[in-house]
Image (cartoon, rainbow, N blue to C red; front, top):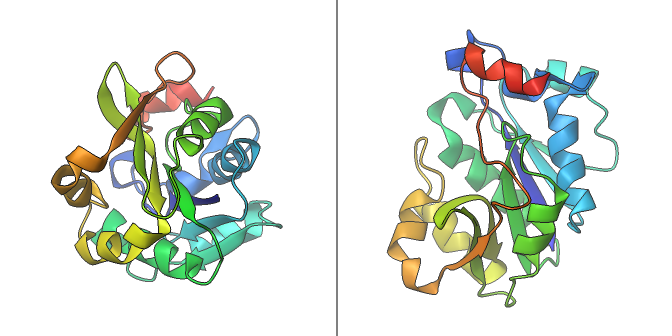
Length: 192
């Protein structure tokens, strides 16, 4: 079970502060997001950077993780998902758990729970909070090419998941995680 952290965003609504570099418990947020995937049972863990990638690489301790850079990060999450899935090709992973760097309320327990829902290379699962689909999401390797083909703009896999809702296993995680995003200056309080 591989892990993939999408951490390329430039933090437009945060005044241009890249989310990967936000301070969380004294370290860059991207370190926390990668560790959560590893602690949840994912190996290898891939990280897609974009905005301020060189600064992130210089400040964050990412040894032991596979890092790819999305040169077109400003076009949205879809491109980062495509870069990440391409980086996983040939990894031997049967599935990947995908998380977003800006959701520190989602920990290893939710990752492990979603990973446990894997049914092999055709799997499709997502965490749910009160019955509503959220992150992380799990994609079996047989689905990666179609997901990458549908990922566009800032939608990532949303369209794919909507079209394949009948195959999607929702895994309730509301008892072990909080699915908030760090999007605005007001949200930064959640990092304290």
